[in-house]
Amino acid sequence: MANTNDFWDALTDLAKEKNISMDVLIETIENSLLIACKNNYGKGKDPNGKGKEVNASVEIDRNSGEYHVYLIKTVVEDVQDSVEEISLTDAHNIDGKLQVGDVVKIEVKSKEFGRIAATAAKNTITQKIREEERNVLYKEYYELQHKVVTGVVTRFSGNNIHVNLGKLEGFLSESEQVKGEFYKIQDRIKVYIVEVKMSSKGPRIVVSRTHPELVKKLFEEEVSEVRDGIVEIKSISREAGSRTKIAVWSNDEDVDPVGACVGQNGARVNAIVNELRGEKIDIVEWDENPAYLIENALSPAKVVAVVADADEKSARVVVPDYQLSLAIGKEGQNARLAARLTGFKIDIKSETQAREAGDFLDYEEDYDDDEYYDEEEYYDEDGEYDEAEADSEESSEEE
Image (cartoon, rainbow, N blue to C red):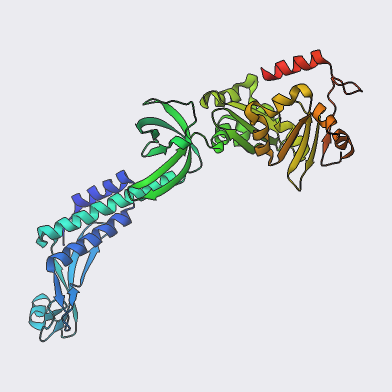
């Protein structure tokens, strides 16, 4: 029997430091002692001449830390297999009551193990501890998958960035970086954890600055109503580094979802814009009626009429002549983001284009519960608009 108080205390400290289960460590010690024992006492041969490992067992007291290592053999008159058998004479030296056919446990001391056997046991323990460390870290960071965390830029590998997330590094590939964003060592940035997976070298964490969910999580952090579920973010469309549109809905009629996300004097949304380094964010109200939703999604452009086909997931939109470029957006961005936000293919025409195509009256005739038609206040009964009012409106929207 070996008194291992010091060893047991060290093992307990190791379990706490590495956050590894004591049961796992004890099992590892047992296996390593078995390996050392088998390596030290070698292999025998069965009657057919085939190799056979020594039969051994390890017992560790979970309370005291004392352990025993045994060779297990059967008592026989004439030993044919020294690996599994012990003579009756030798057995009586251990216990005079033993008889032929009894199984005897012969205790051996670990200090009797050879250097090679001891090294093998040490390597087994070291490898198992390393594996358990990786598993613990994997589980810890797997729980953070699809969440936003703050990290520190530590190094660059080509165009890729490594971000210190505490105990592990996150990998921010070039494809997950926002064009135009530049970092230097020690910069603190918020990233979205896309995936945590185990590799041969341990947990690998893929992070992103371009993922639409990054914006959603930032709103959850910044807006208590979103965090508490009072305001829901129903949909997000994003072109990272340039513009994002989000559609929000309130489960409380007394709470304005857009106002809650914008905050007093724009404080809440501005905090998120600053974190995203100036990316513009359009916050619009969600509506179950796709026509109204599409109208909202095309903000800041004003809309004259929308006819939406829910089955075909397509919509025809008419906007004032002077709002056409604003509705479409630079390089089609506003229309593209609105289409992604709503899930509808959107065909936008100016009022003049719609009238020239001869289908403007269709918008009036097709109006029903699933469609929308409206005339802006600056249009007269002949379909003409006040140019001064229009110019003023366009200037204010583009600012």
